Length: 119
Image 1 (cartoon, rainbow, N blue to C red):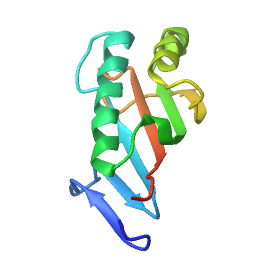
Image 2 (cartoon, rainbow, N blue to C red; image 1 turned 60 degrees about the vertical axis):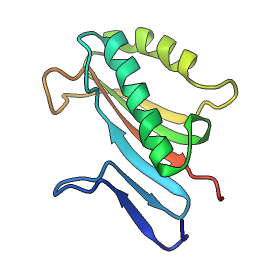
Image 3 (cartoon, helix red, strand yellow; image 1 turned 180 degrees about the horizontal axis):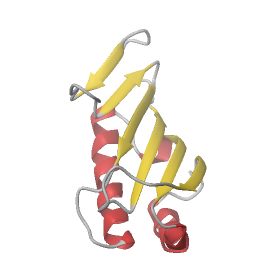
């Protein structure tokens, strides 16, 4: 991708699935399925991997993640899944906060900033 080009992946009227600019991808994931924190987290991770692939990157290149949890009581369970999902030595900078989410069914949402390696 050209370094000065802004690439919007699947743009809609209110958002794009991802935006890539200067070898950095920006995107948000909310769970498409699951009824508990474990199933929603696993679904969200699978979605994030698909989005990263569309951007030409992968989870080894996550720079920053902002994690929004509906219930901070789910933090320990989420952290165990997060640690298992990330490749060894690739933990990004991150924040984890409690928040009211857009849908009452969502238990988490993650904002990702990911480096896109030069081809």
